[in-house]
Amino acid sequence: MSSQLEKAIEGLITVFHSYSSREGDKYKLSKAELKTLLQEELTDFMACCNDPAGIDKIMTDLDENGDQQLDFQEFVVLVAALTVACNEFFEDCCRNRNRDRK
Image 1 (cartoon, rainbow, N blue to C red):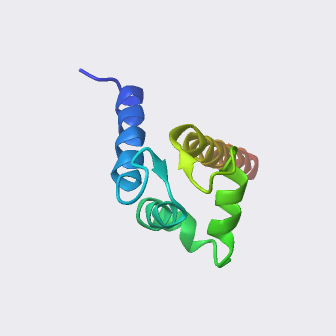
Image 2: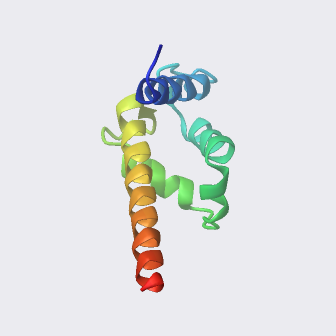
């Protein structure tokens, strides 16, 4: 039986490749594939981002080798950054809730 973390890792790999295989290099996300992935898989996060240049900025920030595509390693940087941001948000909420109870 797979652990929760193993399932999460498998899910990341599966999601990445389900989008990266749609056009061009099947092991990299094009800008269009990244945009679709973000809109379909991170709907709530994208709803907060009304900046039309947001996808361009994400792509530029993550594209370490400048090939205008994201490989899995570059994609994982995005996932890690979002995970850290979410964790910080939840920690802040818990601290504020505990402070308000006092």
